[in-house]
Length: 150
Length: 130
Image (cartoon, rainbow over all chains, first blue to last red):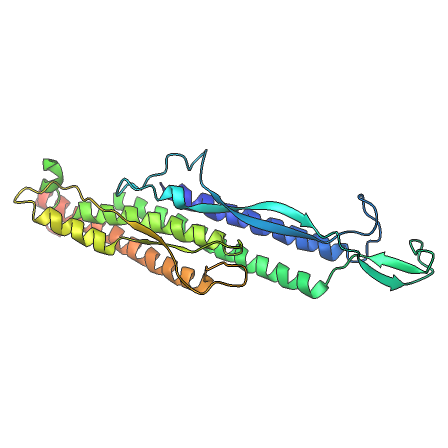
């Protein structure tokens, strides 16, 4: 294990939070979209996170240098496992003049709660900051170690 | 047996070096907890090595007049028992940040101590006392 392990883990967190932010932004932007490529109104999406053990590239041979204990095998980065689509019926609004209104005059809008999306966006921002903080700390520690040679 | 290590090691550069490795590993463990702050079901992890490190130092001291200079430390990686949120996640961001800052300070002080040890050694070698 070296400092890049910590940096890689934090980077996976940054990237996952970024995706979550994008998904929520997309939900907000499409609050009123009555058409979508899959047909019908836009469907709300949600990023599902999963812990991913470090392996392959940098995780395969991770062993603590201090002892022959495979701490690395138990560490996990994070990834967006799935972007889940909510296929619920949508929100029916009476608006007979709308081009997408059905024969009863109802339009199907996406079932999106802006409050929920805003909270999600703020939480993603906070978590992003926390990961950035962890990455900065790891970087500072590595830089400090270089001072031994001064 | 590593003679040069002992010769160079009146005050514990090898102990400090081992500690640096462990602090660095702990940073990775904390980074992993922070990255999984929002992962459902993730359990926060802790890397504990204080007692193991102390035992290793004592074992080395009792090794006789010429200790090996190599410390056998077995850090313990454990899962935090604690209240989980509704999604089963036990990471507390506040706790992780506090631990990370503490770990950071310990790492940096160890680096300072190593530098000082090496300065002393340099002074002894050159006979130049500043």
